[in-house]
Amino acid sequence: MINLEYSEHRVNSVQTVNNDLFILSVERNDLEFIPGDCVAVYTDQDKSRPYSIASGSQSNELRFIIREMDGGEVSPWLMKRTPGDVIRITPPFGWFRPGQDIGDAPFIFLATGTGIAPFLAYMETFDRPPEHCLYGVRQKADSIGFSELQNFCPTQLAVSREKTRHHHGRLTALLPELPLTEDTHYYCCGLESMVNEVSELLQTAGVNLSRIHREVFFHG
Ligand SMILES: Cc1cc2nc3c(=O)[nH]c(=O)nc-3n(C[C@H](O)[C@H](O)[C@H](O)COP(=O)(O)OP(=O)(O)OC[C@H]3O[C@@H](n4cnc5c(N)ncnc54)[C@H](O)[C@@H]3O)c2cc1C
Image (tube, rainbow, N blue to C red; front, side, top):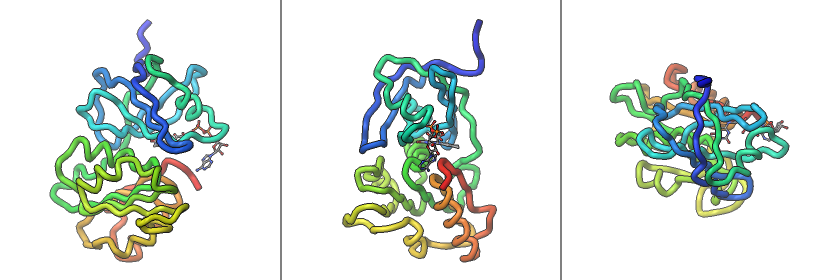
């Protein structure tokens, strides 16, 4: 019997980036998606969690940037996959559409940690860059895609847990440096506290809520 709820994808690689952060690459096959889409990924115990696709929509692979959660049901299982394993995923879904459906309006990306995934998918798919990108990470080594982003658009890194040549501290401290214009769209993705704080600060600065787009991966 064909199960229409999910498709099967062979694992290409699992690459540890830094401590609990890894990149999972699986064959895309003929799966179509829009940058910003997520899929739910299943374990062999039928547990599933949503993960945002980090690769471009024409790439041969589906790439995910995943943080392994201690004691988690799905992310530790995914980290243990090896090339050739098969994983099941649902059809892509989502409502977060960075840089899309806004005509010629300018836009800005703000991400913490794995929340950079939809923005990397955007960058690999489209030519029009955002005005700016703010990227918050715990350590510099967590900053997946940072140099590619720097080549694509003005990008600033905020590193919270070590001193580097980049901003030391939270991403929100860099907000005053952003161009705040009436027609700019702001796309925020990652940790709930960052998304909420950025939304509040932008609204206080006069940005209309309809121009603040939010995707929360982790609560806290
Ligand atoms: C729309 C969407 C897209 C997402 N995309 C991604 C993505 O691209 N990459 C990614 O890594 N994750 C992403 N997530 C989060 C992902 O779906 C899982 O929630 C995450 O991987 C943990 O699942 P788990 O089964 O491993 O852990 P669970 O079994 O769900 O939880 C394990 C433990 O972690 C604890 N925990 C939960 N949140 C935190 C936190 N912030 N800090 C510390 N401990 C915590 C829980 O209390 C629990 O004890 C996304 C979530 C959403 C809603």
